[in-house]
Length: 149
Image (tube, rainbow, N blue to C red):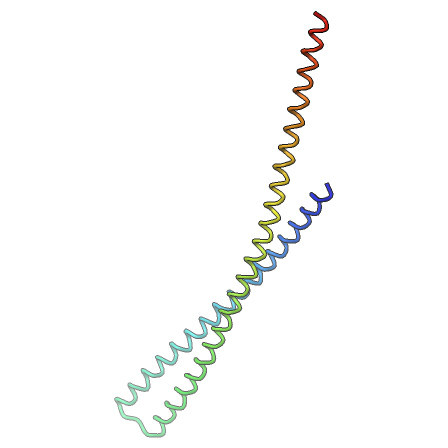
């Protein structure tokens, strides 16, 4: 019976670990999604700004304004490159968190499988004991009837 209790304790601990890993995975996935959204916003802003620059060039602008456009475009490109790095790192953390969660789930399922096997074995033994008792009772009943006839 102590092993059953120990197995239940292991299952409880594995459940807690899996729940915590799932929570961490959710947080990391949220962070990853936010980083993706920021990158998309930066790229969209850059595209819009480039379009404004082209429109201004078509209408004619001064060299100073053109240089300002170029400097700002470089800053946007730098920000986009930095955000792409943030997104890449966030995706790596998400992959790691997903792998950690899977390990916890597999561990939990292993304990559950062991518990199920133990329960089935207990049920099989109990059934065998019941059958043996029934057979012995039937044998005694038959023997008792023979003795009285």
